[in-house]
Length: 425
Image 1 (cartoon, rainbow, N blue to C red):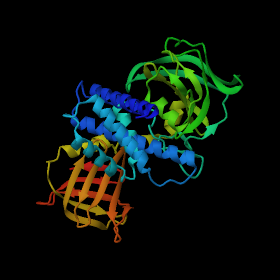
Image 2 (cartoon, rainbow, N blue to C red):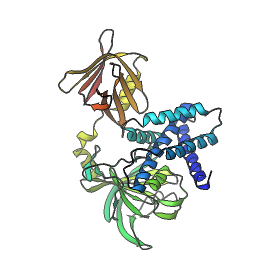
Image 3 (cartoon, helix red, strand yellow):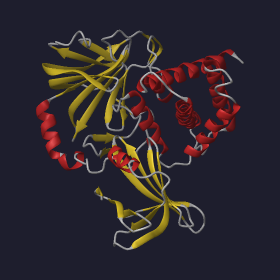
Image 4 (cartoon, rainbow, N blue to C red):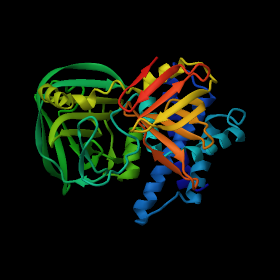
């Protein structure tokens, strides 16, 4: 094995160890073989898309699939890593083949990016960023479901100058709110020249939180990312073992040779806009990992009032639906009725099985065509789709208005799901 490949595999091993440590902590200081399979699977899925996008970027060609030689390097790296972490009696060839088979199966899902992002948001209790960003199409700025302005992904922007009046702050660690309060400060951004290069300097006027964040911070690059604009420092060499910095390196490239972050220095500043106006700023740290959020309460109150109908969608909650379905008897086949927008039957079967995991709820509709209704979570919200086989054997996504599950013996309604609300009987 050459030196460059060995360094890459060592990086793979460190990352898998990090994910397993996070899973161990999240599972109250334990994990099992299923957890190892899952973290290995999502490790492969992340790198599949990172390598795929890197090839497209370097070749400027419309690549349709990951080259087999690249896949082999990735697979061998996983084998190398698991071999160093565990012995062969725990992770044997059979287990490796199960992980590889799951990898190919998961790539078939058309919402796989959302599943990957949701997995790592859940693992690290951090819904402030996505591991993988999907490039949006059509207009540059759209409106997201949470009401923030949305942008094309990974578009490089000129450095910014602005002022943002702050009234409140919150500090988050491992998805938990650890500190919050009122603060009277102004955040000012100015364009400066450092070593002949334009950069953005973020400065706090009257910084009363200097024990948590530096009074001024200089960022190297400005890019767009879904529902935010990001100011970033991406060092080639750093003291931070951070998956976000690693992913930025692969997607954007390094912005400076060296940067060692102290506890008060963020590597990322996120700007959230509503109708072109900043309503929130967050700072991400890596030593240790934390997130500090700054906002103006008056702006947020006005923002929430205007977007109440968008934000208040608690009737369609994935976890609530999952909990209720888990209460139902296991290994039971239900009668399933699916209705179109006119209220007519689209599917009527007496043999529907339910599968439930962390990412999806699947109604397997065994109507001779093996159609599916899939409910999945993205950004803590519930989405759903009806997948059916067409006459030529391909899969299409069909719309529906309502789905019912009924007891096949007495036709009693068990659960009814509408596109806007669901209810239980």
